Image 1: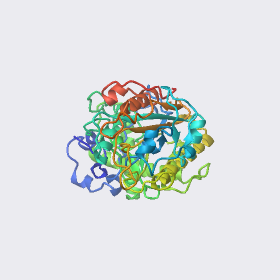
Image 2: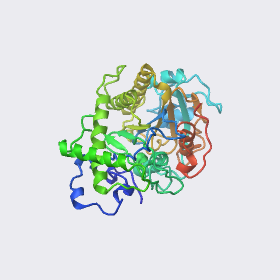
Image 3: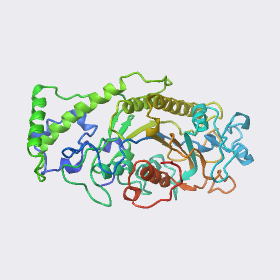
Image 4: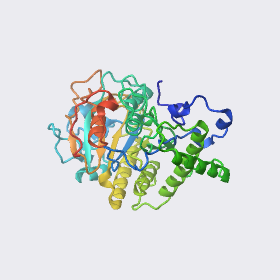
Length: 449
């Protein structure tokens, strides 16, 4: 079954559990709360006496930041001494005098690169050794469609179909999915679902066995089902029956029981998250929607939620017209991104959790090298990726963009984005990247784990 980057196609709970023991009874289906139609909470039950998953480092967290719309990499990480850069962008190039020059020389001799002047926060983290930048990231035969390219990044597959790469990772940890298996029997260890903050459920998080939690704000993420004593009593009776039969390895939960348990899990989950994010952050965040997303993530980490993957996004990077140089739409977006990331890591540092959290930032593609007639930039190909945290091998990775050797006016990619994914899986999340990505990719030495 193919999945696409469309929130309307998100399943509410796992297919295996939904189809368990055949079709659901009509009466049971009518009892499904509306809340469950948008978010999955069908978590595998833990084995008796176990609270963690063997071989999995559950203390580490990954936060993914998506810059939607195609961020202009050349005006984000600027080759400020390259005359070809200024010639290609006569009105939107960043003047050398305004660029935040990066002091750390790259592994491959990369130098004379700097950040957009609106990125004070990222420059600060970079100088502290908390930021790694990977240049010229892309994939073969690039697709310039927003939706198609985003699907490719989300699935880590050039067809753009299938489950999300992080969904497959979660499946492999909680359900034994990998190398084509469809899951394990009832009683697999528990694993918290990924959490996405925003209006849509990212394809990257959608798996075959477990689906993510997705909400725009904690006030919108609340239990809307029946709070009656009957539902609670039914849930308690279900748990009692489960305890009595936990020694029976072949015992299967009925569809009706599954719905009741899932409904109560949803109620508990929503209340836990709302309580977590209701606490005052330890630092002051900027008053932007993006910063609010990161503040909620930091609050959930501080509260000790077991979630290992969080997903946030910042949009409107499709700067075809009026992009601007040091001022304008692109500068405003980069400042929101930069200031939000800085506040996020200051909060994590105040919590003592910064060493637990790796943040990876990407966009579906960069922009063309030359500006267009509308003082903007059109869809391009390769662009930089950013990684943040004390565990990163700080500095610039990869050679500077080669503006003399272009592919029909676009940058040629040098690092496949799946090389970054592979290293995150292997060296940070303690998972097998080969099982998740179905191929081995060379690491770029981005993470000191």
